Image (cartoon, rainbow, N blue to C red; front, side):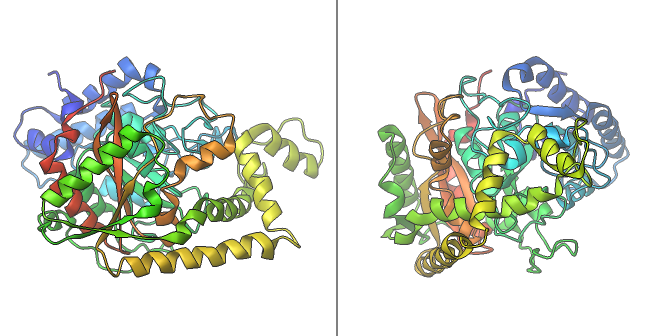
Length: 487
């Protein structure tokens, strides 16, 4: 049976499976058929899990045929970013240093997906160790945006967004350290949720910046996002940063009326939109929220202008610490040209880390070094505290903050890859949520010259239900999520 994966959501796929419109084997095989047809162009996947996926699909069909109770993600094909551990499957972090690494256990998020009945299609591309905003830092080559193959799908979770937008799966996991789920979501017409720090377990995630890293969700609709969050959220004793807070019913919360919702527009986020057409898309979206009964209020977050500078002091510092374990002794591929212990360290890292990983290690080592710690790292942490307090204060007066995702639609591959500073500035609207530890959600908002434009909603800590409800009402009032890339 021919199945159009791009037209399916998790909700509609579940309905089709339960009503015998198609089998789970049909569904999974349709994903792999599409991958074989189009992934040579999109380059979303680094490894596939086809044999196990078909076996799992047969088990789902058996359960359905016997009338057994179906789990919440029974038979749903999902892709996993390659910085998230998967037992028995390669997990490379898109780096040569982990080229042959196969974990002995699953990350908690993968365990929870499997327990809910999801089927893992494969591992998807990303910037090396999640260092980047375009997937061009992957040791295995960049992914391509299904809406325009000459452009980036975003980063660092660009393989996740490309796989979902191309119709290779029905959902994807990514990670967001400073925008790595929200920006790809915005550039690929998808929902991209960065949850509150600690809302989803980080256990089994290859760490980049431990104080801002979080697994998150790429999905096609607010409803699908809510379902996935309900499964993934919750305390994990394996993760010391995991929050013990009760997990609400996110799906039920979608129906919360939008009337009276207070939306803050931080003026600092609207001053540097380089593309007037993107600015007009965001302006029209704000108008839709007002028509739906939301109250829009202009607010100010003056210290967020320091967000990029703060982030790119704290992040390299933590990267330099986290990448220290990849030394060719305990973890990682060891150089075959080393004769001494010092050569093992230097040659292993020199041969196997990419340019951006090396850049961040050197920057991080510098800002943590004697004589510079107080001037850079300590000062950055103080400014981070100021930004966090400022955001929390404003969120006492409004329910959510609405901003652009990026100053423009998806960039062309190669456009900024040789200018690290320009690439860092692609995250200019993303750092605030990461530094403050609050949830952020990219929402499909329209198109400019055929390229998707997303808006960002940010909310109070553990306020994901409010973001999803607002997005759901906006989605129902527009038709952006019904449009799909044509490869």
